[in-house]
Image (cartoon, rainbow, N blue to C red; front, top):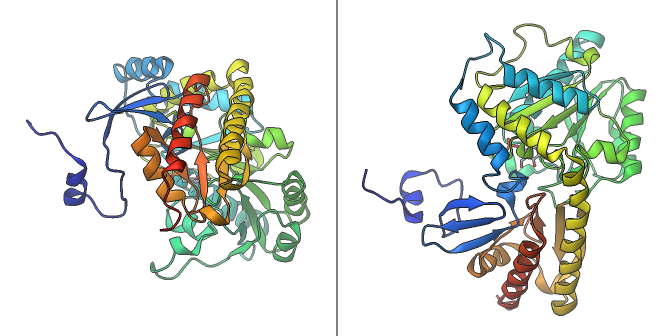
Length: 404
Ligand SMILES: Cc1ncc(COP(=O)(O)O)c(C=O)c1O
C-alpha cells in the first residue's frame, strides 16, 4: 500500500486513550532513535523502562530472528524449549522454584493476586481474602490490578471495584500494621515505586512487610515489573534489599522490548495452581521466551550489572549540575537507572511541558506524575549519550515558560 501514516492518522483510527507526541519514530539503535523526517533523538525513556539493552541489541535481534525461523506459537497444550530454558535461568538466578509466563506486567500481577487468593483459600479458608497494597502504587490496567493499585483515578467511572482490597501509605510500616490481620492473604508492593513518583522503598519498610506477612500467614508479593531485571543494578531489586518475597512479578525489561511477563514463586505456593486454575494462550510462547532469555543472559552479566551504578552516577551528577544552574528540583532520587527528579515549587507541575520541550531538543524522557521527571534509559547507554542527552535536557528546561 502506497501510504505513509502520520501522527494525525492516530486521531482518525485509534481510540483516544493515548495522546502520542507529535513525532513518529521509525528506527532505533542503541540509545538513539530516528523519526519519519530523519530527526535524531537520544532515548532516556527506554519505551517505559522496557528497552533495557537499548534498541535492536544484536543479541536480541539474533534470538528473535533465529527463533522466528523455527517456531512461533504452540499454546500451552505443549511446552517448548525456549520457555523451559528461560524458566530454568530465572529459577537458578532467584529465590523461585517455579515460573508462570504471561504477556505483560499487568497479567503477571493478575496471576500473582489470583495465586495469593487461591493459596489462602485452599490452605486457610475462604475468609482469608484481604489484599493490602499502597497508595501511589501501580500494578497494571486489568480490573483486579488497577483496583489493587493505589491510584483512584484509574478505577473511577468503571463501576464497582472488587472487594477485599485496602491501601496503606508507602514507606509507612505503621499504616501497614493497622491493615494487616488474620484475614490478609497478600501484601503487594513495588520495592521501588515507579509510576507513583520513583520512590525507593525504605529497607526497614520492606523488611517490616516481610515480618508482617510471616506473622499473619500472608504472602508477600513484590511487583518488580518496572524495577526488576537489572534496573537497580541487581538482577532483581529484592536482592539488593535482602528481603525475599513469596511471589515476584517481572515484565518490561524482561523481554527487552518484546512483550512478556513472568510470575515467580516457591514450590509451596505454586502447588495450588493445579491444572485449569489459570492460563494464557500466548504466555510462554517460544518467540517471547527466546528473546527474553537473550535479554536476561545479557543483562545478568556482571559487567552490565556493575555498569548500572556507574551510569547512574553520571545521570545524578548531570542532574545536580542542571539543578545548580536553574534551581529547578526539590529532590533527585531513585535506585540504579530508575531515577526521578522532582520539580520544586517554582517549576511546579512542569513535567509534561518538559517532555514536550525535550522532544524539540531531540531527547525522549518520561514523567512519573505531573511533577517528576523519570529516567529509565538503556542499562548500557554510552556515557557520551548521557552527557549529550543531559545537554538537551538543560536546553529544554531553559525554554520552559514558568508564567504559564
Ligand atoms: C510496577 C508496575 N507494575 C505493573 C505494570 C503493568 O505492566 P504492563 O503495562 O506490561 O501490563 C507497570 C507498568 O508500568 C508497572 O510499572
